[in-house]
Length: 319
View 1 (cartoon, rainbow, N blue to C red):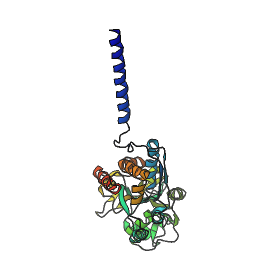
View 2 (view 1 turned 90 degrees about the horizontal axis):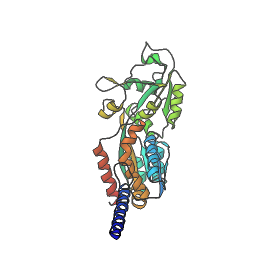
View 3 (view 1 turned 45 degrees about the vertical axis):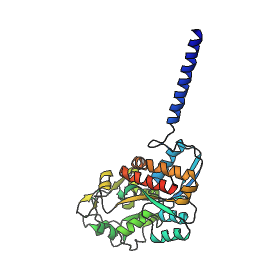
View 4 (view 1 turned 90 degrees about the vertical axis):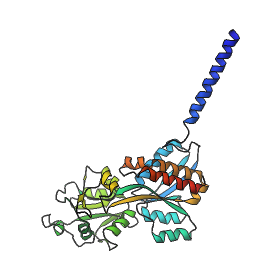
């Protein structure tokens, strides 16, 4: 009996050890937000849009906790600058706040680089003024065009009831996808006024407006949210004649038009195929982009969009 008791204890101990081992293994499987479950090492290089940067920075920080041996570098040189590095073979991924241009696609084709576009979130390009500005309650696209082309240089040129004071303008730089989007949608590809202060760093734009009572700037919605205590966001009159302020609902349903826009990341096929770290990080990014976008102030896509993106990624990777 004593021998049987000892054997029973041994068997039970083995069962408990086996169960614990199984439990630990199950914790490493991929389940909505975790990495692939396999330990990966290597480097992922990306650059591009300052608007997309907060999303990818947040994804990279979370990813580091599950794959600490992968170094993810997220640079900022604007959408255009990012595509230049992408076509030069300097990066694996390129972030953009506008679709890739024909000439950029041609440069990638000439370099022999195959790529896929992934939409990761939505943004509302936000028009902001100083928090002390209590006179601008709404603007039309035509108002914006006149201001940024230099046809209206004083507030009173826009509305006679507004102050006779010079508007001070702060704009993203010409390498920025935000600049390109504004230039296309608002300015209709006409030359922006030369007096505007340009910078690829959105924080410079924020500081410019907060430091000038007559300042005005435009940038991604997340940067407005981050600085909303010191800025006023201006409602924009849409095609239905309604003055609409950017928020998660109006950006998602499209009523904040024409300044609602998609955000993208572009991924090089050879990097996905040859570098397990690039595939694993991109997979993690697509699984978590919606949550990270909302965390930093942008708007998530419908879940099926991320599922479709995952299917495209797996097809590239041959999985």
